Image (tube, rainbow, N blue to C red):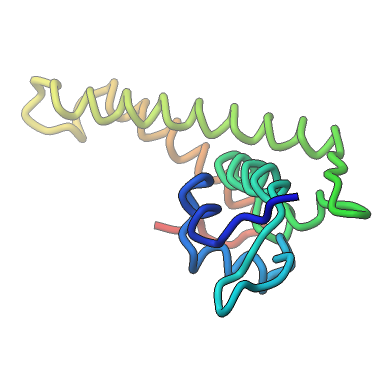
Length: 145
């Protein structure tokens, strides 16, 4: 089996060489050895990196992603966790749609003061309810600004 050089893996996966080294330190991937000073990887690492990228895009932490790789590095996906993450993403998308509506309204509202505009006040209430839901989900911690 042909081994891939770290530069080849970086090029094929879109993950920088430093990112590959970091993932290796975190136990997400492993190199098959070295050729001189350069790490070498089996071609299966590209599948792992695709899963890592997909997981990151879906909002999973690296710790959560590390947990999906079971024995022999084969992924074991918990369907309940995937459903939960999909639900979270749907809520985030709804919040983003609300935020888009707020921004568009602010940009186009002819009212002299947005604070006097009933539509803007309604959109602020919706945004506040969403922030409260996020805060409860985060155990009362403030959402990052």
